[in-house]
Image 1 (tube, one colour):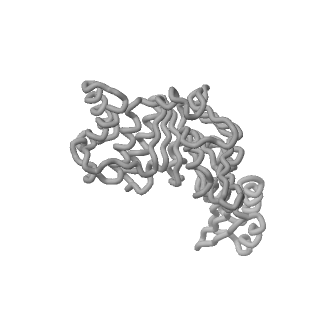
Image 2 (spheres, one colour; image 1 turned 60 degrees about the vertical axis):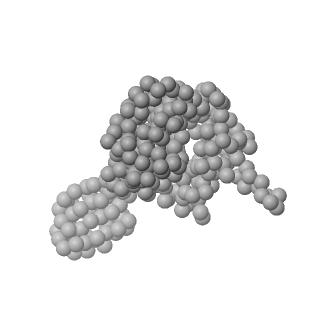
Image 3 (tube, one colour; image 1 turned 90 degrees about the vertical axis):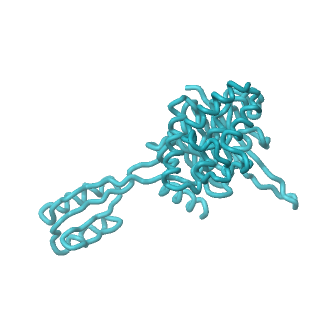
Length: 306
């Protein structure tokens, strides 16, 4: 599969007033395959925005190499096939949705008939057909995000870079934007998403990179990153003393009425608890619990602060 983005040994070092230096990005390596949704996450100050600016050719790296759609970052021909939606896109509020899209269509030198056709397609795609004639000051935050996505699609780009596309949205708008991003993948687009909304990243992304302090700390598919880490064993009618017997095998044991729940790491201890329960309690269920992306993210960031 061809790569949409290749980052090799990327560094960005800023010089301080006192002659010191800070590495905002430090030896970053990853690649994004064409046609996938790639999540790029990390705490504030991790180097996400700096990396995005270098991908777009707005900043030059101190060292390393970036290839975007087969061209060096910042290449004019590659830029024609890229769109970027910042966290807080700014539009003139007195303009209508149609006028905003028409303005940007003109920047791509589209003729009147082509502009009219494309604007209609885009408003339908983002669910704003009935609201295109309203001024943007009447738009909700979710509607502004939709018009931003519509604007980012004018040139039918192959690569879209979205920064916090669902930040501050209500649940319905949230779901609509998620569905829009998934629909872009079905069209063969590559979507690079940076967000603090980790449930969104987990829901839509094929692959995720986690960075901290400018360095890559985890990279992989959701299946690779989110392993099953704990199992909850529920038993009924445990005999006296059985809870104390299994405590050395468990993270936690709780007894509620006639039920006892044993929380243990998935693996050998699960079988040991089940073996110990024979004749001493009745098995109700064994439920593996999958780690969430938020669990993994918090674990990584906290470890990095030690």
